[in-house]
Length: 124
View 1: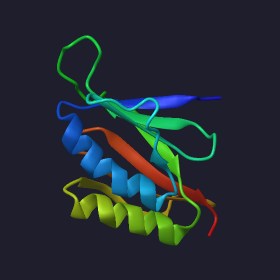
View 2: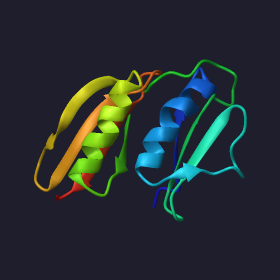
View 3: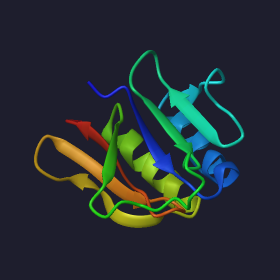
View 4: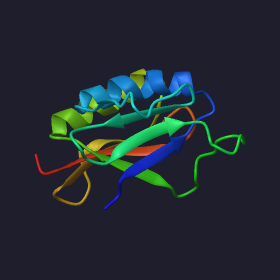
């Protein structure tokens, strides 16, 4: 139902450098056809896309209070791997990998702009 999600950033180059290895670990790639100097789009086999970029109105990007996006992983090991990569790249930990309400297994972090992201899988 959701075609894409966009996260705002005040530093598009830094955001791309942060998200590109995380999305690659999840099997997603940069979608060159949509990507520009101010926005990077990621996609995986026709599924919904993730974009990170500067707001179109020229104002500063801010993280929404209570706003969070969730990105599906293939396994608990992949959840843990992506979470660790995010923390190593400077994200702040918002919740270690673990079972929340079975079968939901997730991990949470905030990126450099304060956007909250959950990486999850259903089951093992």
